[in-house]
Amino acid sequence: MTWLVTGGAGYIGSHVVKAFTAAGVDCLIVDSLASGHRSFVPPGVPLVVASILDTGTVARAMAEHHVTGVVHLAGFKYAGVSVREPLLTFEQNVEGTVSLLRAMETADVERLVFSSSAAVYGTPNAERVTEETATGPESPYGESKLAGEWLVRDQGIATGLKHTSLRYFNVVGSGSPELYDSSPHNLFPLLFRALAAGQTPKIFGNDYSTPDGTCVRDYVHVTDLATSHVAAARALDSGVPLERVYNLGSGEGVSVHQIMNTARQVTEIDFEPEIAPRRPGDPDRIVAAGDLAARDLDWRMRHTLEDMVSSAYHAQRLAAHT
Image (cartoon, rainbow, N blue to C red; front, side, top):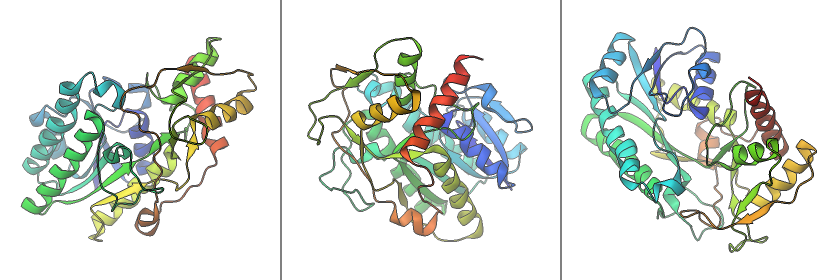
């Protein structure tokens, strides 16, 4: 049994690979290294450097390594940037998923865990989002993830593909000091890079319809997320029926201002954040109920907000000195 992790050299992907290998499951990584890091690939795990748009290469890699299932994480993940780059976003996330599904069909691989996103909900009216909450994406990124879910669903109807889609909320923290979030747009790396450079961290917008005016998000630790991918893969391997989609969220919201306060405590650096203009595509608040995932995918919050900030901070510091 070997599981392919597309985007497995990235921040979330490398944690998923680590969780699979810790569980005794063999992995293959396909990653273009456009945003991934070769150093994130564990010893002994084969890496195929290729884009998921290269259907033939991906199909051959699956066949050569006897892949039985896929975790699909590769893609373009920047909601704000997607507003300026919609064609790139749809190429990577929609055409890329079509290409992967074609490769899976060619290689007779019949199990898929799809990486989706809270961005499919846009700005929901619900206090806590459930899987039944209406979708209404507000960025090309969110639209592309919802389209990916539809593709996976329809391929399941057409071919019997066994699948589930996991809607991530705000993934943060680090499970190993050498694995860090290198995104140029995510809150935690932006915050820690600014502090390391002696600059003032920014809050993008303080006029949202939230208690303190800053965006409220549902932050989850990356290792908790990775654990549920292993649970999903094992369920699909065992023929256990899964829901079509699951929210991986904590059920509790944390504002950007609260994150800044926690960072001040963890880093012991006194600062007052600068208020910058809103970023396009950012909803006011989004918090999810993770009840279904808790029932089926070993989903639970094993880390506090301080754990998340502290582990991310130490990983970023190590990265800056290597």
